[in-house]
Image 1 (cartoon, rainbow, N blue to C red):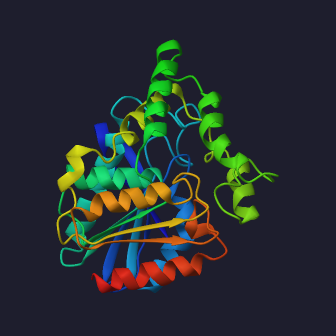
Image 2: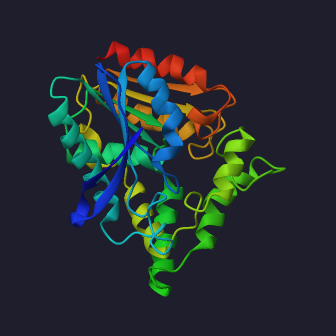
Amino acid sequence: MEKIILEGYQNQSFFVESYEINQPKAVVILVHGVAECASRYQQVATILNQAGMNVYIADHIGHGPNVDASALGHWEKGDFDGCIFNVHVLYQQKRKVFPTLPFFLLGHSMGSFMAQKYQYLYPNQFQGIILTGCAKADALFKFGHLFSSLMAMFHKKTTRMPIIDRLSFGAFNKKFRPNQTNCDWLCKDKEICQWYQDTPYVGFVGTAGFYQEFYKNVSKIPNRKYKHVIDQDQPLLLLGGKEDMVSNRGKKLKKLARFYQKQSNQVQYYLFDHLRHEIFNEPEKQEVFDILIPWMEEHL
């Protein structure tokens, strides 16, 4: 693995983890979720390397071990799209290096929302799109937008908002009582959950500005503007766990799949028994790769 630095949104530098092999047959741009970082996908990248693919993962604005503590988990207005812009900068840089290879966009959780908006802002760049830990926005997301906007009205944008963290991630965790960590909802691997709980640059409580910008965007994805985001022949794969609270045990993932199935005849989805939100970190993760990798190879 190599770390590279690129210049992105508002001329600010961002870090990318680069996992390259000799003579790759495809390139994967992976977009991580909220309150995590690129390094959490080292094992995913290694497995995809073994399947013959280069993998690149950018740390989002306000995320990762290289961000100052005061900036960790903070966004200003426009930073959601700024993260997407950085993904596009990364794509353009790697497309110059590998002009003939197929590219795949893989977005997890918040990254799945970013991947959809990427496709809206920069269409027709990727051979296939994979969304994991995904959901179709509903009334709860819209409530999150309203509540976070109210909090931002009455607090400084840089004020930490543990109440929003409790109402969202805390509520997810209650479904898995008795809890061993505050993030049991992520996966069943307790070592991973403990690391996530103990590591300061992940699992953080975001600021009022962060949650407002986050919910403002995800509550609108997808909407009517996205009806033509996926071409008729655009391969799209949605993967999730039946115990994922973000998708309400898969129900919101199915709704998202049905939304895009109205546009494309190449939309597939799979829900895995007993898997929680982070399907790549579950003990049964090989089941996920047994679906993912053949699907990608089919669409090279």
